Image 1: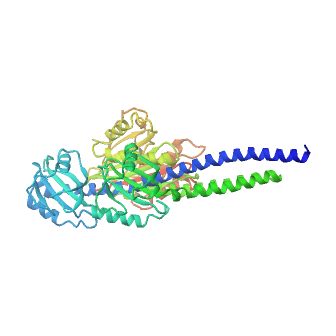
Image 2 (image 1 turned 60 degrees about the vertical axis):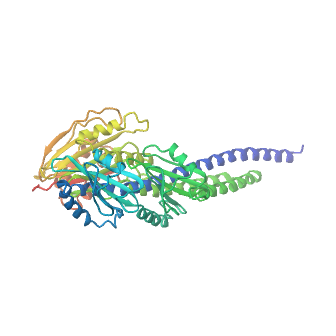
Image 3 (image 1 turned 180 degrees about the vertical axis):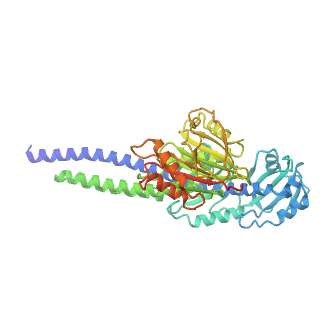
Length: 551
């Protein structure tokens, strides 16, 4: 055989080897891209579920606040009727009306229905048994107008004894109108173009979404997937042969949030979901063909291909960064209790997402719960774990006897959970009338208490065990400090490269002693003083709460 033929055969053999290697690599990358697209859609469903969860919780909080009115404490039917009759429910969607049943379960007041009948057990019995609150699935009731979800909370008399149940009917016509409005604007970066939003009630029935005008059953295939992957706070995405609306080959992603146990579903055409991956695969196949030609011609095409692959990676990193910022912002509270100021600052790294969080919410007219925490890790998983922990704290706070009890309940809640990560938490309950601060710590850096005279005290210098190691012995301490300011922070604020942690805490304490606690820019001034203008090497969360001296 002539040398030219031998060279050609060698080039063909080498081309076959290169084609096989690149074919396998492109196939694996395509599969990874599809899996990443499904995970991304599931994350988007979780963001939507967080928004829905917050709306439901707002209704519960509204009813709980209303239940403390003197009319319900008196048990007077006339006073309760007058109080409920003056409520404008149009903006909240509680147009199904309000009802109050006494301790015997008899409806005594109903703004949109008759009275004297027995209340349905699905809303009267759980709330009347003192569980705190309950919400039903889609239903029709003689006490409310139209198809509704019924939210119910107990009412108590002047002695704290349950004397009835206050309920409100959340109109499903309102829910469907809001869902339709959200569907009209779902083509943004947060949910993705051509996405459809659906809602399932706690009984697993389809109550809202495109074309849904009445409560109906979910298609069996989708219902099976939701049931199989419907764990608490769960999320999942898969390719369905047929979607909820009957269209073929749809990506269905859903997320469930307790305690409402409702499911938010995002549906998107599979070709749209995988468009970026398909385009990338097609482009890579063309480039691989070019590489084979380059091998045959003796060119150095490989370096160019690697540059193109790196450009694709950078584009994906930028997209992940933008989504991370949106998810992180959605997980932090939008409003805080009066007297509280907070800031969150991401670390100086490519993905601005982490596990730091804070919260300040009113437990009663005179008590405020302050919480700050740090989930181990600096990625999307840390942020999602943070969302779970923050939701668990919010739910457990309703039945905790105090800060230490809240930490013990949280520690037991995650005991034995294989997905549990380490979490440091500090929580305090402040009585704004007496200026008494009860607090407990689970492995968190010591908060700072600025007294009215400007002196600064460290709290919880010896914290209890961190959440996630199975130890529950958290102690509760107490201090009385009228006119004081409580400063809670995560370790990113006091960590400086080459310095010990105590130096950072002392630098922050010096800044706290000099600050004006009432100034709206106080948190920013503390961050500038603590970091010295440098970029943080870790996430930073800061919560400042001032107690008026006259309280």
